[in-house]
Length: 194
Image (cartoon, rainbow, N blue to C red; front, side, top):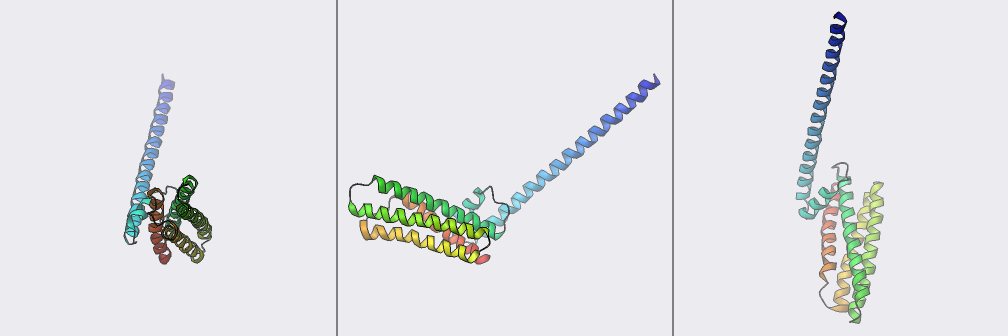
């Protein structure tokens, strides 16, 4: 009977130790998850404040908060996110212009306008990709130059419509171009803060 009580006593101690370790682990997990939530809230507050100071707060917030791969809220990481969104919009605009070019058979002037647009928007997306690689090595000055060149490419597309077609730019194309232009205003603001 004494052996049973001794064994039973060790079993109670073992269960007590396991329970305590489990509770401590749970407490550490809960504290760390609240810390992560607090960090995410702090990050969103920083991003909201910074974006509100830019010329285009809405696309700034939409872009940065949708970037789940961004590690920090330092300005160079935020500039990278914005420039990547600008690159994505330029790429979508190029795809739209290319599709419109391929599907247009009617008016020669319109076909030329789409061709100029697809070429300049292709150049814009490539230039922005180059800018992203420059950002990765902290070559901020040349990354901003890439953004400026891509921005100018957007306006070459607009000019092509005025020059060759004298019609409104189709909405599926202009939507991406407008967002890319708005993101340029944000990326320029970010570069001035670096």
